[in-house]
Image 1 (tube, rainbow, N blue to C red):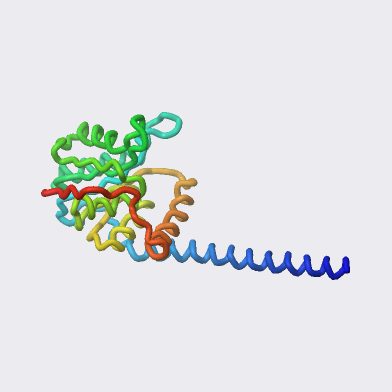
Image 2: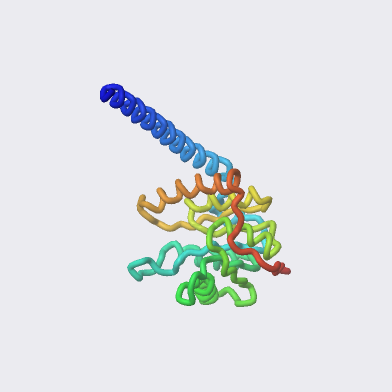
Length: 222
């Protein structure tokens, strides 16, 4: 009996190991396939030359913290503000939605972006703040559903552009992205984005994820 019991336990362990192996392979395949899909379907809409940008009335600047955890300036934040201000100076954007996280009174991405963009020469009346841009998906959907915009230029870093455009296209938004030119080393930022792209595919096509907050419509007349 003891021998039979050990044999049964051995079979169960092997079966579990096989199932876990299959799940791991499936997860890796899904991760790789999602990244290929997101990047390949959007790369033609990621622009680096201002001359190729359409004459869009509105630019959506995706939020990030103005400071790193060590207190130093965040290059992602600074580059997004610089590129957005240049869009205004070149007449490529007449209005901006600054969408980010406002989790506490001490952390307010839209307000920080507004202060920086005004300092860069963009008038206050050309800026709308979206305090409920908790995620990229939220920022993009709210830009359409709350602010009534279906044609936009997205301003963010190159690695983030693909996912932002992918989400925009899913929701029927005519979007292109202007990538910023932040010089950063290969790091965990890229690894997080690989997983974020896979999550975006699941959010859109499997879970049908919606923004955490919508609310009353506030259409912008530009």
